[in-house]
Amino acid sequence: MKPSSEKPKSCRRRMAPEHLFRFDCSPGVSCFTQCCQDVTIVLTPYDLLRLKNRLGMGSDDFLERHTLVIPREKRVIPMVVLKMNETDKKCPFVTETGCAIYEDRPWACRMFPLNTEGDGTFELVSNAERCKGLEQETEWKIEEWLKEQGIVPFEEMNELLSTITIPMQIHEGEIENPQIAKMVFMCLYNTDKFREFVFKSSFLDRFEVEEPERIDLIRTDDLELLKFAMDWIKFGVFGEKLFWVKETARGTK
Image (cartoon, rainbow, N blue to C red; front, side, top):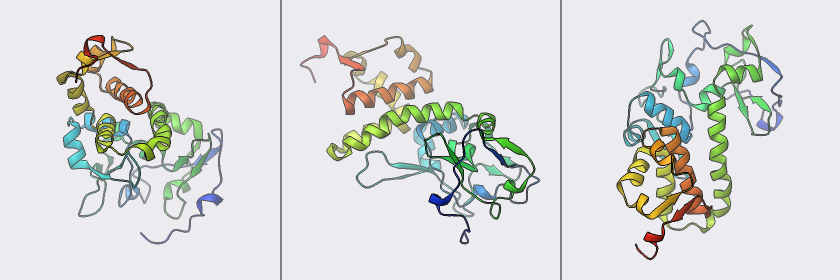
C-alpha cells in the first residue's frame, strides 16, 4: 500500500455524535470493496460468535480456517485477526457485489470510516484520496450512521468485554500459569469448547451459579453462553463472587 497523506492520529479532528460527515459505500463508488483487501481486521469475541454462527461453523473450525491468533508479549489475551486470502490478500467474504456476510460483519467493518477512542468522540480513519466514499453527496449524522450500521449490540458486548480486559491489564503480570491463558482464550473465542467444559466435565457438580436458570439458557443460546463465560473469567481470574463451590465438592479434587 502506498504512503498515505493522512494526518497523524493526534491531529485528526475529533467529532461528537451529532456531527455530520459525508460518506457512501456502494457499487457505484470507484474504490468499492478495495478497503476489504490487505487490511488487519481484529475480531472481538462477539464478532467471532456472529461470524461462525452465520457460516454454520464450530468455533474450532472457524478459528482454524479464518483467523490468525497472534500472541502479545506479556498479555494473557492474544490478538485474533481475520485471515485474508493468501493469493490476493482480500477478505474471504468479499465479492464483486459486496460483503457476503454483511448482516454479521465485524465491528471494525461496521465502524468504517469512523473510529472511536471510547471517550464518546469519533474521528475519520481514512481520507478522500484513499476512500472515494468520503467524496459522495450522502450526508450522515454520526449517531444516525452508527444506528444504521447496527452498532448497538456490538458496543454493548465491547463494553462487557472491557470489564475483563481493563482489570486484566492490572493482573497480567501476576499470571504465570499458561493454563489460565488457555482457559481465558477458550471462554472468549471458543464458546463451543467452553460449553463442553460446562456440561461434560464436573463443573455443574462442583459449582453453584448465581442465577441457576442460566444453565438451561446456555445450552442453546450462544450469546448468553459468551456472557456466562465472561463471568467465569471474572470468578476464576479476578475472584468476583459469581460462582460458589458446592458443599458436596469442598475438599474434593
